[in-house]
Amino acid sequence: MVAADATHEVTNEPPPLAGYDIFRSDAALVEGVSRAGAGDRLDEISEIGRRAGSPEAQEWARQANRNPPELRTHDRYGNRVDVVEYHPAYHLLMETAVGHGLHAAPWADDGPAPHAARAAKVISWYQADGGHVCPISMTYSVVPALRHESALADDLVPRLTSRDYDGTNAPLEGKAGITAGMAMTEKQGGSDVRANTTVASPIGTGREYRITGHKWFCSAPMSDGFLMLANAPGGLSCFWVPRWTPDGGRNPIRIQRLKDKLGDRSNASSEIEMRDVWCARVGDEGRGIRTIIEMVNHTRLDCVLGSTAIMRQGVSQATWHTHHRSAFGRPLDQQPLMANVLADLAVESEAATLAAMRLAQCFDVMRSDEHAALLARLLTPVVKYWTCKRAPQHAAESLECLGGAGYVEESDLPRLFRQSPLNGVWEGSGNVICLDVLRAIMREPLALDAYWAEVGLGLGADARLDDAATALQKDLTDLDEAESRARRIVERLALVFQASLIVRHSTPEIADAFCASRLVDGGGRVFGTLPTGLSLAPIVERARPVVT
Ligand SMILES: Cc1cc2nc3c(=O)[nH]c(=O)nc-3n(C[C@H](O)[C@H](O)[C@H](O)COP(=O)(O)OP(=O)(O)OC[C@H]3O[C@@H](n4cnc5c(N)ncnc54)[C@H](O)[C@@H]3O)c2cc1C
Image: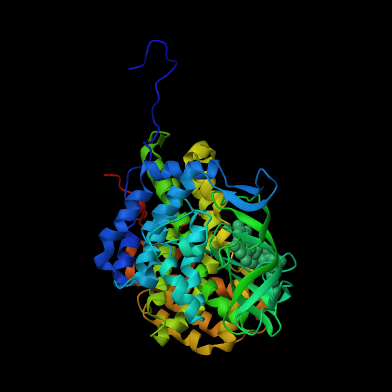
């Protein structure tokens, strides 16, 4: 019924996608958790899944992004304070993430498959807001690197793993829970950290130093401490740099300005300068890269989880909207060409989810299982490269499924789109990651053997996978001019790996669609170019979130 003074009745608009369990709505993720050995933890993961899909969390995310952090360098009297002020919604997001153990629980968790369980939580929660997950990821990742220094780890790890979020700017000693960041990138070099000019001068003969220099990207500058690279007398070394010194004074880390970023706006990324900043060495002098790489490997896993989340959220929004909106006489998801686009997006999201969860499973056992360690060595960069590369195109296409509504901020898809290139840049940009894969292949042949053993588990299920694996194996025997071909090599490593998982663990329709479109020549270059003869409706049906 249209009111007397109304111009029209609002029809054909979908209900909001809110009030649902983001985790339980994702069949591929739920199955992945069980396969990883965390099947007993579905209810626990569901708690954050429901939170992520709640209208409250969606509103917090909007507020935290609409009111980005602000830098306050001085107090009213002119004293340096160097604080970043966040909207209260940011702290609510952080409190929820920490409360559910996304920041570091696996290091203090006796339950089964803690890294895989956390991965599912991160994939679910990141869909509410990706920005604040940056300090969450860095806190998770700092622990294995800190363990190079047992006294420091004994002091810090209990507070890093605490479920109490304390966002105050106060000495670490008085805080129940703390967070951590990392600072490697300098103006003259981010990928090539050997170009770092920041200097660390020893104080006496122990582990204490003073750092002078700068960092060009330092995200989450309100973290309680950072792992930082600097040149000590013995070479590039890794240091723990707390925001407050152990004697309770402010460590003089000057925040020059905040980056005005494309996306990731709820999270502050800063430029910092340091003069005689107190710090403690972690690991030996000259072993900085080897020490911090432990952190980098874990943040790379989180880049995979973040981009997987972006694709899952995109496909959820796209399948939801098109199911509830009609054009030209039919629901959009029943128009054959839209069904093709949706199915293609769903296949990509499913492949990313399977790969992410298999990788996280390796992180659970790699300290005691050599095969898992070798697999993680090669798969971490392979999966990071491919998942992060697919996310921006996927987000753009998901957005387009909503038509004009997808281009409007209220739909949240513009935010998803702006966030989507970040994981590809951060923690090793695409080319650098591909070169790392080449290094692993050339210097650690056992890692490639582990990869083929893993892929072998899927062989025999689909001739297209068998042929693709044989061709790739043959091509890898000739690594002439491999550097310029590295992207093509890594892409094929990723696709063959994803296919080997999909033929074993996904539905027959998805396996057929993946092999037909990703493993044989003639596949299209955009989403929505699946060949004919596939069964698309069950693929779309599986991907569409359920709101109960
Ligand atoms: C939002 C955001 C947050 C960040 N937060 C942090 C942080 O908290 N801490 C931190 O330390 N850093 C952070 N970074 C920095 C990030 O890690 C670097 O930007 C990244 O490592 C690339 O370094 P760079 O910017 O110096 O680019 P460069 O090293 O100059 O690279 C530029 C391009 O060249 C390519 N390239 C480099 N070497 C080669 C080669 N040999 N062959 C072919 N191509 C090559 C790279 O892949 C890249 O595409 C952040 C970045 C962003 C965008």
